[in-house]
Image (cartoon, rainbow, N blue to C red; front, side, top):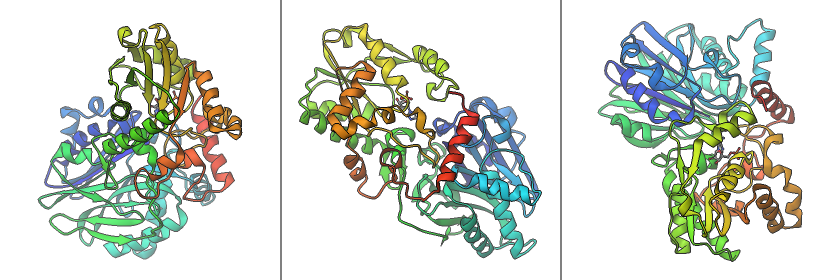
Length: 484
Ligand code: AMP
C-alpha cells in the first residue's frame, strides 16, 4: 500500500509533488520520499513520517528541477523505516524509480543478486526491480539510451520481475529528461496520467491531479509503458498485456472517494455496493430504524443503503481526527488501545433503536468487535452489521496489507460456510456480539465495475499466478516485520 507521483513541468517541480503526495497520504503513512532532476544534478530525500512534516517550505527549497517523483509508503514487503523509503536511484545509467505494489518473486531476485555478489541496501522490493532494469538497459548500450531501448529493457524486466505494480521512473532518453510509468500485465494496482499545457503528471489516483491543476486524462494502460516528454505527445508502448483486473479493494476501502480509477468513480462504486448490500438485507427480512456508517469510508455506501431501506442515515460515531491508523499498529494490544481513542458514539442515535451499522470490510475483526461493544452501552433495541464486501478469506500478495492467512477472522469461521451462508453470517454476528451480520455476496462484487476485477482476497482466484513458495515467502516476510 503505497502512492506514487511523477511530474514533468517547468522549474521547481518539488512543490507540486509535495502537494500531490499530501493528497494521497492515505495510501501510506510510514515514510515518504521526493526526487528531482535538474540538468545533471540529482536530488533525493527520504524520511520517516508524514509528507507535511518531512517536506515543508524550508526542506523543499533544497530541491531544484523540472522533473521529479514522490512516494508515500506503508510497507507490504520489507520493514518500516527510512532505509526502505522510496524512490531509489541507480547511478548507471541514471534512473530514479519508485513503485506501488508487490513484487511476488522478490525473494528469488534477492537471492539471484546475492549469488552474483550484488548486495541490496534495503528490503524494499523496488530496489531489485531497479537493478534488473538498469542491467537490461546496460546490455543494450552504456549511455545515450532511447525510448525504444527502455521498451526493450522493460520487456526483459517483465520476464524477470513478476508482481502487481505501477512503476514510475525518470531517466535521460533520446537526449532529454523523460518521465515514464508502466503497469503490470493485469493492471492490478492503479495508475493514471494527466496533462497541463504540455506538462505531464502520473499518479496512483486522479485526486492528485485535481490538487495540482492537471487535467486527468485516464489510465496508464495496463501492461504498457507510457513515456512523457515536455510539450510532446505521450508515447504508449505495449510491454506485456493480459486481461485487465483492477483491485476491487481499492474501490471498497483503499482509494479516496473523489478519485477515478480505471474510468470508474470510487464514490459511485461505493454507492453501487451499498445498493447491492441493501438488497440482500431486505431479502434477509432485516428491518431497521436508522443506518449509521463507521466513518469515513463507509459513508457513501451507508447513504445508498438508507435510501434503499427508506430510513435516515445518521452520524452515530465521531472519529478522532488525530488518532493514528489502528490497522497499522504493530500489535493487537496497540490496535485495541488505539481503537478506544479513535471512535466515540452519540448515544441518542442508538438508544432504543434498531440500528444498522455499515462498514467496508472485516479483516482481523478488531474494529467490528470494538464498535459493537462501544455501541452496546447506548442500549440500541437491535444491532445489525452490514459489510459492503464479502468475507476476507485469502491473503493479498499484490500490495494490500492483508497478507497473512492466520490473522483473517472470517477464515476461522469458514468451515460454517459449508452449512450455508446464513450459518456462517450468524457465527460472525455472534463473534462480534451483534444481532445479525450481512456480508455482500462475491457475485455482486464481481459485477460491480462491469469488468473483470481482482477479488483474490475474497475468492482466492489470483489473476497473476504465484507459486506456493512465493506465497509463503511473502507471508514469512510479513511475519518477520510485523508482530502479532
Ligand atoms: P479489522 O479491524 O482488522 O477487521 O480491519 C478492518 C477495518 O480496517 C475496516 O474498518 C477497514 O476500514 C480498515 N481496513 C481494511 N483493510 C485495511 C487495510 N489493508 N489497511 C488498513 N485498514 C484496513
